[in-house]
Amino acid sequence: MSERDPAVLTEAPPAPPRKAIPRGRMALLFAVMLTTAAGNTAMQSVMPSIGTALEIDDVWISLAYSWSALLWVICAPLWAERSDRRGRKAMMALGMIGFITSMALCGLALWLGLVGVLGGTAALIAFAIARSLYGGFGSAAPPAVQAYVASRTPRSERTQALSLIASSFGLGTVIGPALAPLMVLPFVGLTGPFIIFALIGLATLVTLRLRLPNDEPQFPARGQTYDAPYAGGSTSSHERDEEDEDEEAVEPHKLRWFEPRLRPWVTVGLLGGHAQAMVLGIIGFLVLDRLGLRATPAEGTGPIGLVLMCGAIATLLAQWGLIPRLDLGPRAATLSGIVIAAIGVLYLGVADDLHAIALAYAIASLGFGLFRPGSTAGTSLAVTRAEQGQASGITASVAGASFIYAPALGVWLYNHSDWLGFGLIVALCLAVFGYGWLALQADKKLTRDKR
Image (cartoon, one colour):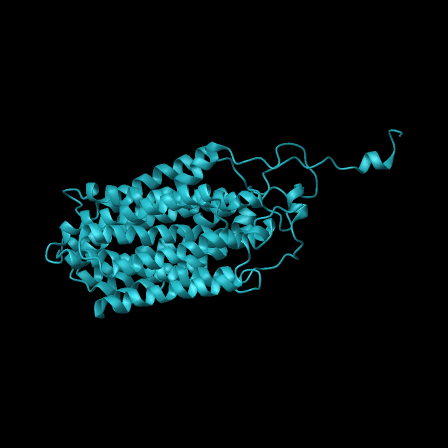
């Protein structure tokens, strides 16, 4: 064959195998999620006590998060789509800026209320406005992290990879409640966790900027925006690896929540997410009530933090232990997790001391710790690699939608009757199991690498 043979001139080199994400980069992604999770759960540890000290009704404390959650639902898909064009790193940084600013201003607003500069209602309104910065801008980070991981991970390994990232939230929910009581300092009082985690977030942002390579797209990708940046050479087309070429061909289009491929996973995510949000909304106030701490709310920070920490450890057990050890696929993790969560919620309804409350919450958290990565991985695997950015935005929006009104509804029902609140949560869990059993795709088919 001559040097000028067209077959030689036009033959493309084989696509290199997709490499695993380096450990250093995974550690940075882990740190981004860990910091935001720890800060948010530390806030949840002290908010029931702050609300009681400000003499604000429990329902209004829960509703203060609603505007932020609504903004999260609206903005997460927009930031996810923007990350396809501007790169994941830029959106992670934007999310961290939103977290830092929100935590600092939330702490300031509540501190002014606790020292009497603002009335309780004014302080809560200022808190809700400051919290909206997290919903509006903090929502940029999780979809970018998820898309970064999903687009660089083979299908057969994606559930475990996304579970590892999800476990950063789990670890954060251990660290946050554990540290929150230690951060109640003499001058700033109950708002100490807000200020300290804003500073931790700033350190994380600086590290992200300095250590994570820039992944800003350099060529028109035509939907294929998730490959590693070009290291050398240039062409006018965007190369795809072998696995991408074998993915099911889908015309590029804007993903919708309830299109056929996503409908089952979005439905179970919404129903199960509402159940989890109600539990989270109720748990802090339940601890104050059943331990008789309403008259001394500052003493509730420790027990609430302990209960949240037990739940977080159980979540880590699910995500670091059970999912990889049992090699659970999305469907198995989702369905088994929601059943365990229902059992934990039933026990929580009758628990009347700190030990029983912590154990019941841990069982429920173990279940939700299986359910969340399962539904997230199922959403990711239901679409092609080119659509991972949009899928991650939908996942974040579904999670945010669960917190628009569900925590306040759960607290309102709980204040009228324990079993009204817990009964609705269990009913939602059973609905997830029944619908998921019929509608979710089998793991063997869903996780099979394309050949």
